[in-house]
Length: 333
Image 1: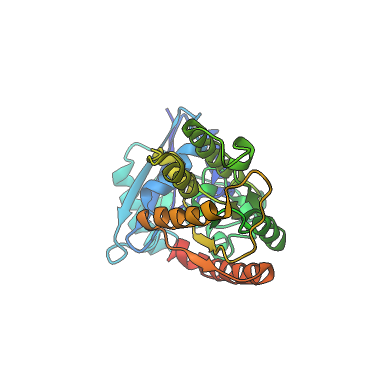
Image 2: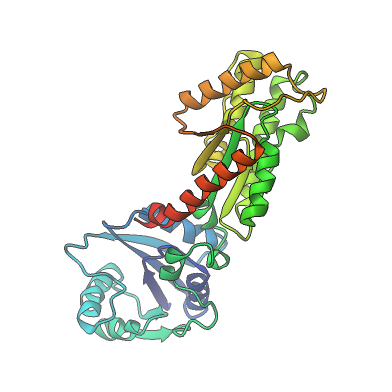
């Protein structure tokens, strides 16, 4: 049986890696993907391993392993030199003693295979099939978003949630921001499931929570890493407390879907408009206090925005631009 391996940092895993692994699977009976993770990298080995496993969950002849190392003790795996290749070849030989084939998209694959006394097959070294590298993704995730597999996108998406009590312009602002940034958006599920804020059941709130999370999960797979979200699970939990005086118990998966990078909270200092389906103005203002308390209880840091509609938009754009500017540092530092 021909046993082959590929190795790399997969920081992040992209479609070029995916194509290389598919190519490697066609050349062997069993393939090991070795994820090499140093102590200086912020994205954990478990996350990178999960990206690849998810992408190849239907393949039976593949395994994904991780190898953690200290940069004070070992050189970077991506360095292209014979001396570095010799060091890593010894490690690979120890980790994978009965493997006879190495697949890489790097010139140094020849060095590593020679030191291991095994065969090397190169795959698309010029990167003509997928003109992308992990370095390019780290530098500009927006331009290279299309090169990320669906298994990676949820972890690298940039989610902005617009919060606030009723009639503070959340939906209007969500749509306006999405047009401005040319990105995807998620409208609140509550307005579709609960037609009137004065008449709904406790069970309806579970339907809202599940549907809203489902919409988020679908939207983050779109063509832009930035997603603007109209309300979130904390609002649903607040309605539960406010209306039924009981806690809405939510699964970890729903919480993870709702977890955002930025929470913008719209102050209720705007004109109240009753359309016949909303709470009274007094209740709407009490709901505002409930929302804030739920967010405090869940340790959610908010950026509060006041002012007229134009001021809210301008301030939101400013906050989102700040988030985008530091996004690279957030993901890769």
